[in-house]
Amino acid sequence: MTLTANAAKPATLVPEARRMEFFPGLFGRSLMLVGERAVFQFMSWLSPQDYTGGMWHFHEREGQPLFLSPATGKRFRITCETNGYQGEVSAEAAGLIATLFALSHLSFQHESDQLGEAYLRLYEFAGDHPEADEIFKAID
Image 1 (cartoon, rainbow, N blue to C red):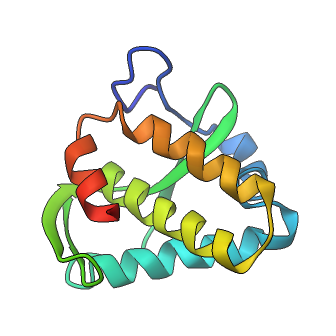
Image 2 (tube, rainbow, N blue to C red; image 1 turned 120 degrees about the vertical axis):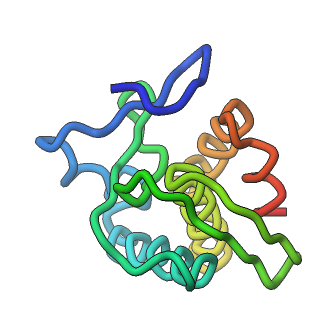
Image 3 (cartoon, rainbow, N blue to C red; image 1 turned 30 degrees about the vertical axis):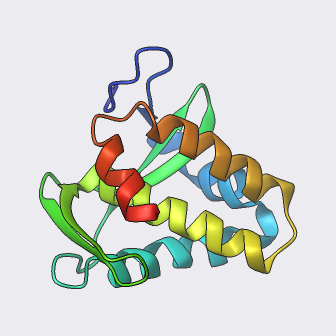
């Protein structure tokens, strides 16, 4: 199932049978629990009025983990106090933003090529996302 319009390489949902591989593939085995928690915490910080927890989708491209997003069709109001951004985005874009924040934050705390590579892979993907303008404003 393709969720994001990316002409060259679309993102797909990670099949249920491979979800256990997602966090180690994105954050590395030693940081997988920290990474998961960081995404959820950033989502709570970015959208305190709309995000209340729940199930998440895992997205990949060509078998490589990309990002998480809340498993809902609702939109999220995002407020980033550190850069003044305020806007409303889809659940997919909100999750992409939260994942970028988590990867960036963790890369400053932990020496890990895997985190840097995951951030760059997701950043590149975000450039082709239909909500790219809002995503880049939110993470600027």
